[in-house]
Image (cartoon, rainbow, N blue to C red):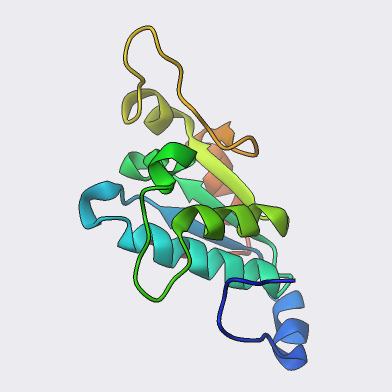
Length: 142
């Protein structure tokens, strides 16, 4: 069960969430705010996953930075668990983590001769995958 969030999910919320449409969280913010928006995005995603709501986090633009566990491990916002812990628990509950293929190529290209470190569950998809997933669903942007 969820261990990092300081609240309990009640059964009425679970029943309501299970009837909801899928949720896509679009994370386009990088490290420019110290990881605040990334922390909020994954806290929201983790909450939705804990409520058994279908949820995916789509990293685009500078947000593809958070597809790298080494970047995420540097973020700890007051009042929240470390970003890596939020992401690990989110993935552990079956949440999907997607990265925009164009952003992946241009926003986080590794130094020549190195390879990018990525969460094992990260899937690189085109923007069409995001648009397709929005049919009948809801989204939040960070």
